[in-house]
Amino acid sequence: MNKTSAKEWLRKAYHDLSSAEILYKANHFTDCIGVDLHYAIEKIFKTFLAHDNQKIPKTHNLLELNEWVLQIDIQEIFILHVANRYHIEESYHQYDRPLPSREEIKEVLDFTSALFEKACKILEIEKKDVMR
Image 1 (tube, rainbow, N blue to C red):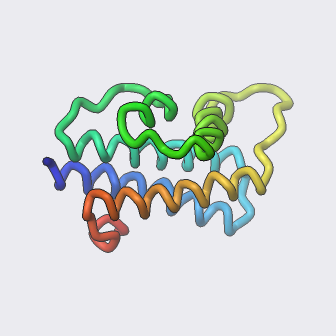
Image 2: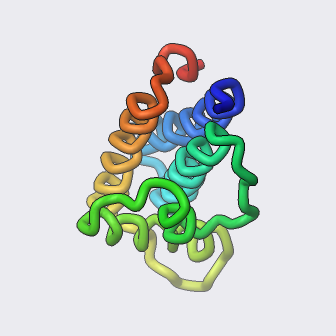
């Protein structure tokens, strides 16, 4: 068990999540928010691997990471599909592509916030220790 490493990964995930929350409240561009949310989810998943002293895979694929880590509820898999698109589709320019809707972003934001809470609870990490 490596709680120190897990806290570092979770702290970085919180930074991305916090950024997404601030940008959402500011009615900022949803493509930017989506990228922050993708990275927050990715880092939350990698937190579990770090906690167990496992090698951190060099992948951004949330569906792969989910298989190695939590294997979340089947209903939430759809949200991972959506968030997975944010890394590639929103990080790289494509002419005339519409931005994700605020409703879609809100759903992924709520999911990511709940996932962060779940990770803290499962790994017995105090939120105050990573929310800085």
